[in-house]
Image (cartoon, rainbow, N blue to C red; front, side):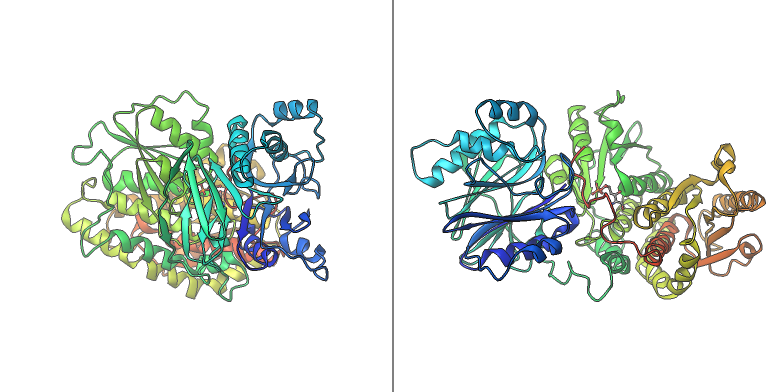
Length: 622
Ligand code: M6R
């Protein structure tokens, strides 16, 4: 995955492009580059490293007079991070520059064809075929704009794979952009326009945004935006973005991740706001399984953290609504002979970014089975929303840190709403209202963890940071939270962490337990007197049994336990306290605590938290 930006207007292009790139550096940060159109032709500056490294290498003393240009921040797919592989890429004459996000699957055969025509390639990338092909498709008739547009169209018709591209050319005072399976937006300004992979890139300049649709090609000049699709002119609505630039900035926190964990209460509130009135839940979509749900089921498809949210969602919906929920990793579903009854299964794709390639592919496959499809996503206008029949938006706001935090909590909220939705839920009125009351308490519960447990968590993070291996264990609705805790720890602190069902350790992983493998055990139970007491009590007792087994093998145990639970102290080495909730809601405080634990552990180890190595915010390749 990469980030691409473009600017055309009356101001100096270079600083605007660099600033925009910095805003979307979470999309890729192994190399960066810009190409500016000047009176002398195209000037390119690019290198390995982050945008700041590249800025340092640009010689500002040499003034670059340019009003249009393109930029790129890269997450390598074809060819290692290096100056030559960094974008923009040029044609042989240095007159056409291209930035690209996606993968050109047939680049090898195109490259061979172009080599046989005498082209010389300098990089190992798939992208480099694009400027060469555009050059070869240029006709010597019509004005420059028309020639370039038609050459880009012809080039795109030769490409298989996915792309969002921006093309700049010597002698043309605009940019040509196109997308297929990779996101692209246009920021509309006053006598200037912007192009980018994602909204934060342009937010500082404008809040007027056009989301390009699948297959769109746009010619963007300082005073016009022309869009066509399939050869015909189309109109795309302009939307006003309500996020402020502050929403997309760190707001005084050292890292986006810490800011975003602190925004978890707000993410819950904002997600509830759209769907929960006094005593009614209105998700505003037609699931197609309302009323008599007999014989109907839900299949959830997702990757990474979203998969763990979905696993938690399975517990929540099955518990509250008694509708069977199956779950598949999107990347596995795509290449399996999954048996799917399209008429009776609603497919839900859970994806924060709405751009994860595996999940989009899975959505398309589900549609081919004839399933009703629903996207649960945080990003308005993202690709998932265009593919799915219906969309439920989470209200987490922009999430910049690569580690998904507030978006995970917001996804859980959607599952509570789905589980409690009257049309699905089989709950008596009193229990329904009691659950609603509990759900409304969740922002406050999350805030209590942030306010009261944070200091204690930092202490335990210092301890955890000394180890190279850790286990996270839980049961039932908190097993996915243990998996999420482990993923978050390994992702940002590089400690090898495994999430496990507590009852499964004895079937193999016990062999790894020593005094050097701390185990984080989720031991929360329900608040006494609340619903579901028996099941909860049982799980708690089973967890205590598992903890005793772990301790007997010499491993230190850090428990996540409820305030007031004195019992747990007898069996563990350390306790992180969280407020008590109804059992089914305990994933919320437990998640906040584990996100903080991962954050402070990574901080203690001096890791680069917002941009962990080898990862990217949205993974738009398979
Ligand atoms: O945007 P998505 O929710 O589809 O992303 C799926 C995963 O790539 C993502 O959740 C990843 O696991 C997280 N960044 C981990 O924190």
